[in-house]
Length: 228
Image (cartoon, rainbow, N blue to C red):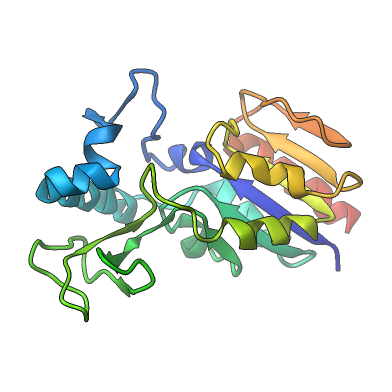
């Protein structure tokens, strides 16, 4: 069975109503990124950061997977599919995808503020100040902030080296190190890019699909199912 690796970004979740980091005004829901999404922000005002991610979590819980998420699930019936996502929502899992690697964490889990390997499911929509891990440290969102290492990037790179088909959905490939994953994909693998703004990739055979995810992904999946 051929291996399909799908790299997804904010564009696929935006169609479920979730705001992206990189809106045109440079803000995320009215906040400066450096005030809510960095280790320094946590040191200065942890309560603000906590509430910001509690709001994001409520948004995620209220959102629903869209037809692009569902189409990728259908692909699993014909290919070995791994989704590598830059998104912190759980919409791929809720749609039914079996193999999802979250590069930047997932907001429905919490983590220890002193040991990022200690993670827990969030009960409800909030992590409260004073809620601690087994080591006694404050719990925070299980999200990789700007300035923090991306712990699963090496695993993701290895997955990319095994791709027969590589699909980029809803990302401009502007955020590193995730954007560099395309460089690990074999040159002879067919690469598809589904996004209204096609990023420049020069690595073998590339097929551009300049549409939003909800339009381009179902059509691409139908083509790949016919070829399987």
